[in-house]
Length: 295
Image (cartoon, rainbow, N blue to C red; front, side, top):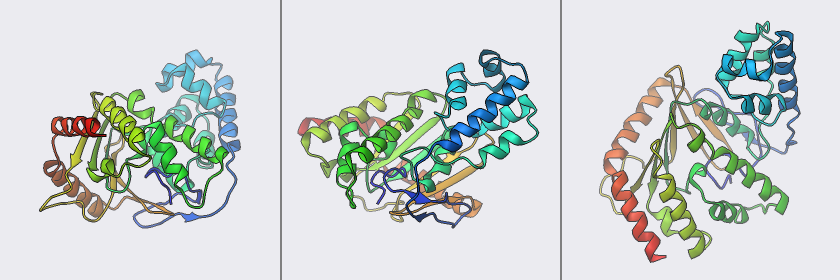
């Protein structure tokens, strides 16, 4: 089980593709060798073009710090970076070819890596979750509780790796202020009290703080409802910079990337309906504040 609804926790093989392919669980090394090799390729072509990192950064519209992280193999390159670097450096297709062989970040399941890469340049990301608090919204204590409850048990080192990966991914909410993030969460996710009262209080404080960000909308779906458009389970929708809509579903040992326009349209209808069924963002904040006082 992934225990986090973001592909962190179980190591799988192969990112899912199309509208039905699913990654299979397997044991495989968690190496960042391919990231380092990709960084060396970019660095070599940058130097061939006689550009410093400071000169290269504005040409691909990324910060000098991001360029350095990518060249050092510490950051997975966003899709738009790959495309811009290829064009700016006139790299004969080498940079784009090298990007196809990148492996996941340490701590991220391989089936989730493709979606995680798409998140880095998304214009909007919409999530409905009924199993656990989404990874992007989890507090440190909630993360640790989810990992310590995992079966098969994780070692302390494995838990720390996954904590670091999840916390790094959470930077999306603050580092991409022009991306609209919306979440619809079932009320019972808070009432479960995973990790105990202290963890739940920390979680509520954390989510209340995130709900104040202008690019983040959080709505709660009440437990008692006569009508509910999300009965088929969790889903995520994402809009790419080219205005293509993609979907993502995650099970216990696999992830599924959805590209079929018919299915995407159905997901969009369900999300739109759930937004009207759930509490408003303001009412959701009030409910979380009341739950915070009751824990």
